[in-house]
Length: 88
Image (cartoon, rainbow, N blue to C red):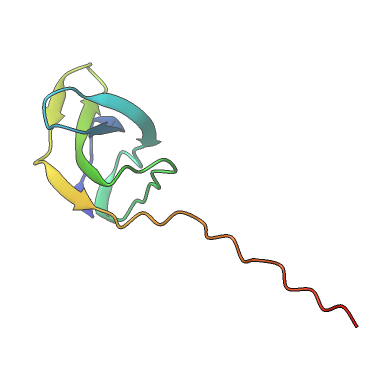
C-alpha cells in the first residue's frame, strides 16, 4: 500500500534466491498521484525460498529500493493416483 506516489513512474518487482543476485520478474505502473493505493503481483514461478524487493522508479529515472521480504513456500509435487481396475 502506498500513500504518496507523485512523481513515481513504476514499481519493478525483483526476486532473488540468495538475497544478492536479483532478477526483475515484473513491473506495475504507478497511479502517480496522492492517495492510498494498493497493488498486487503474482510470482508464477516461486521457488521454495525467495527474497523479494521493489525498485521504485521515479519519472526522472531515480531509484529507491524497498526493504527485503523473505517468503518460503511449501512446494508439492503432483501425486499420481494408481488406476484400479476390476476384472470379473
